[in-house]
Amino acid sequence: MHRLPASGIAAYDYGMVIYYSYVGNKLFDMKDTEKWDQISEAIPRIVDTFSGWSEFMFSFFVGAAYAGDPEMKQVWKESRPALAKLLTSRRSPLRQSHIWPLD
Image 1 (cartoon, rainbow, N blue to C red):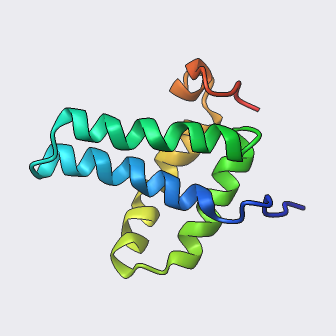
Image 2: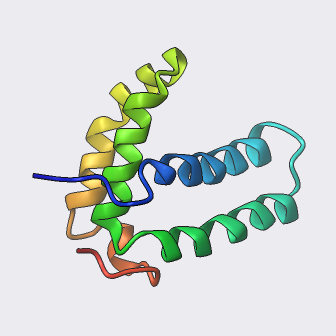
């Protein structure tokens, strides 16, 4: 049985910072430097807060379930197969991550 880490659903907040940084950069007027400033603040917090990918992803998905944003529900529904593949595939870019080994 999974239990939320002590940080609760903070992974959702950190993940949304990264997501909206990319969206702001691609669709709006956010500059590359602004995007990377936001992301470079989020990554160390993620690494300090979570022990690995499993803990981070569990926290993230619980947070997404509780966020209850109606627009995001469809995004999560459509993204579920891709996210499952990202987490389980031998060729996943997460396996090349230098943040944590894939646990």
